[in-house]
Amino acid sequence: MGTGAEKLMALDEAIKKYVKDGCHLSIGGFTLNRNPMAAVYEIIRQRKKRLHCYAHSNGTGIDELIGAGCVSRLDIAYGGNGKAAPTCIRFRAAVQQGKIQIEDYSNYHMSLRFHAGAMGLPFIVTRSGMGTDIVNRWGYSREMRSKDPKIPCKKLEIIDNPFEDWCGASKVVLLPAINPDVTIIHVQKADKFGTCRIEGLTFCDADQVKAAKNVIITCEEIVDTEELRKKPEYNQIPFIHVSAVVHVPFGAYPSACYNYYDYDPQYLNQVSKFAKDDTLYNDYLDRFVYGAKSHQGFLDMMGTDRLANLKADKKTGYAVDLDRR
Image (cartoon, rainbow, N blue to C red; front, side, top):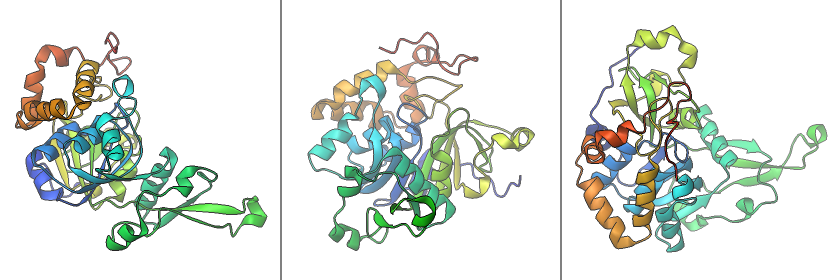
């Protein structure tokens, strides 16, 4: 395991340097888990606009970015916040009102697209999706695609299987790779050079990182490189892919970070109520995002007792007595 240059950076500096208006942005996590929320709130505070976002199945992260008006286009499989919002509220409203354009893929399709990007391939082959409307219905017009060289000229392509005599399938689906300008993920542990360890489920985060031109890592802990070297097989992300490392304890809050803290059902339920009304949601942003100035300021608004109640049980990795209603 090598080291390279130190990459420690303040969160506001990392967002300012790498997340530009109109850039293609991928964020990690899955529904209620490990959304890079500190980074999301900083993007909103810096009032980034016209982002083309990519997410596997995301939750409050993508919903807040859309609700704050940061997103113009989105490639996604699913957006939801568990019981608080089985379908993300600002996301759904923006699609229904035509405020954002969306390209719809399945979970497996998005996984494959990130994997293709990580491998440096222009596309990847699958049989998944045949016979579904995902194949037939396209969200981005051919005219729009022709005007943006970062968007593939087609949603997908169906071709004859050149190995039909061998495996029997007459047709296969080609899915275009994703290569974001920036990927942001939240991890449990990282060293100052960018080697990362994700505890628990990794989702598509490692491929999202490897597919991107620049990568911002937010983490619960900065640890010594020697600690990560003791069990290198548990380190999913090598330092060579990482542009910036930001130490942000509770950086996934209000989503969960396995082995550290659970998601906050009270907060997510409250935000879901605000999200159903434009005025209430704008008031929410003014108070809890723009008014917080930093992620630590936001956490201070929540209070230490509330955060302590979310602390993960050492055996399960979750808060075992948490009221999730």
